[in-house]
Image 1 (cartoon, one colour):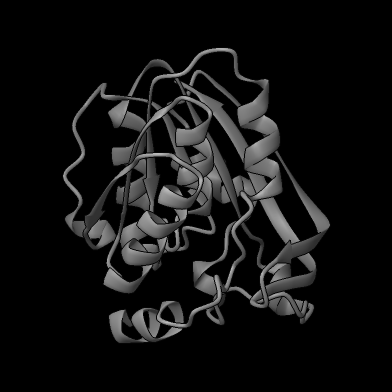
Image 2 (cartoon, helix red, strand yellow):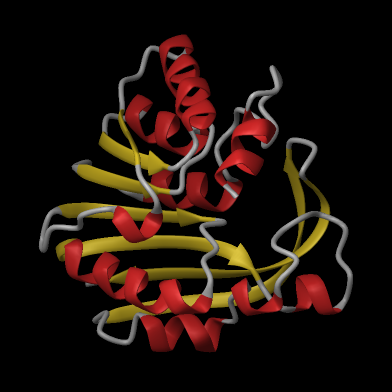
Length: 200
């Protein structure tokens, strides 16, 4: 799988574009505070670089060296700075009460990893910290939406599943909806997604 992502990210083009995810951008732009933000499975860095440009201190990780290289180039281009680690999701060392914000944009995991990863994400938020999440819903695969995503239904997220994973949050809101994706060539066209905003 690491070879798959390295090969995909080695292309000169930014395969998911250079603009931040629209939902994440809208939510971040509403926030009046800044702080320390974590971007797991961040790929080519479009969201992390945007947050850094907005004044956040940013940590990101992915297991693709090619993704990291492109992310750092993108941040340099927009005059932003991030700390980017090469880690698998299950290897990342979370620390409790560390982050003001965790951003999970299309951070899809196998079920045996997902629940534990989401629990660790929750515990690593400071009190009052926020989670912003967007991922593909099972309908993306069931109804053959053309805009990408994992081809394994067990890796797709309903709002009910995410509410259970993040049940310790003091406030949680979200929705399941059809959207038009314009995120490079691999997230293009109509898609069905789940969105979640949570506060610890």
